[in-house]
View (cartoon, rainbow, N blue to C red):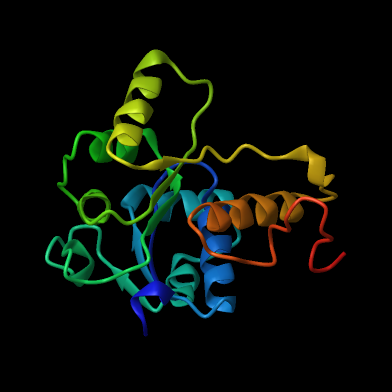
Length: 193
C-alpha cells in the first residue's frame, strides 16, 4: 500500500467513539490502509456508548496495536503514512500530545506525525472547556496539530444522528485532504441526495 493511502487512527476514551468507528468504516470504503490504536478507556467507552464489540471495531482496521507497543512501526518516522487522526481525542490524550509526553503509542505516534510534518487531526471531545483545556489546544496547534472539535453543522439539515456523524467524519477527512462523498462541497448534493 502506498503511504498516501495509509492512515493512523487512534480512538481515545472520550465520549463519541462512534465517530472513530465510522471513520474506520469510511476509510475502508475509500480503500485506505488503517493502523489502529485503542486506549484502554476507549474500549470501555465503546461498550458503554455503542452496540459494537471491541473485537468488531478492531476488525475494521488493517492493523491494530496495543497502546503500550512503543516499538510498533507507527512509532517511527521511517514508516510513511498520510498522517494520523485521534477521533475522539480525550483531554488526557490532548495533554500528552501537547506536551510531547510520549509514554504510550497514541502520544508517540502523534509526536512522530508532527515531527515528520504530516497532518495530525485531534477531534477534542469535551464541553464546556476551561482555560486549561484551551491552553492545551493552543499548545497542540502551535506544534502543528489540527484541532477539530466535533461540532455539528446544521446547515446540512441532518435528519438523523447517523447523518450528523457522517457529515462530521466526512468534514474531518476533507480537512486532512482526503476527498470523500460523505462531505459534499457547498452547493453540491450529498451522495445519497
